[in-house]
Image (cartoon, rainbow, N blue to C red; front, side, top):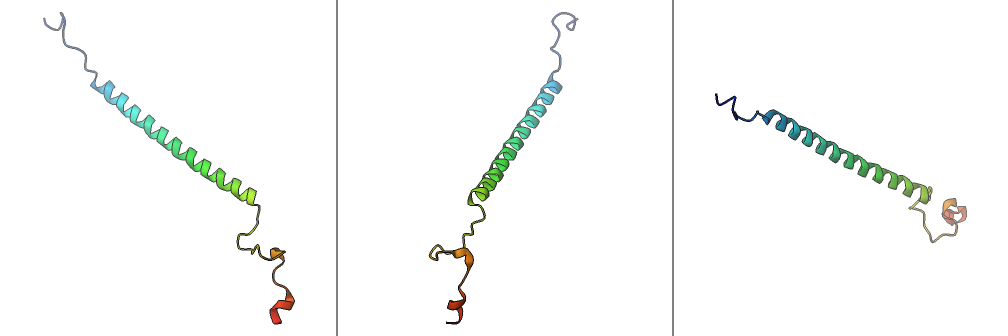
Amino acid sequence: MGGLIGGSKPDTSAAKAQMEQQRRETEKLRAQAETDKRDMAASEASRKMARTRGGSRMLLSEDRLSPEEGLDDETLGA
C-alpha cells in the first residue's frame, strides 16, 4: 500500500547522467571552438604581418644605398 499513498520518488539517475554527459560534451566543444578561434587569429596575424612587411628581406643590409641590387662588380675583384 505504500506505493499508492506517498510512494517513493521516481529514479532520475539516468536523466542526471545524460545531462552531465551533455554538459561535458558542450564544455569540450566550447574549448575546441576557443582553440580554433585562437589558431585562426594567430594565422590571420601572421598573414597580416607578411602583407605589411611585403617581401622586404630581413637579411638585406641597411648600410648600403640599394641593398636589393647586390654587390658591385668593381668591389669583387679589386
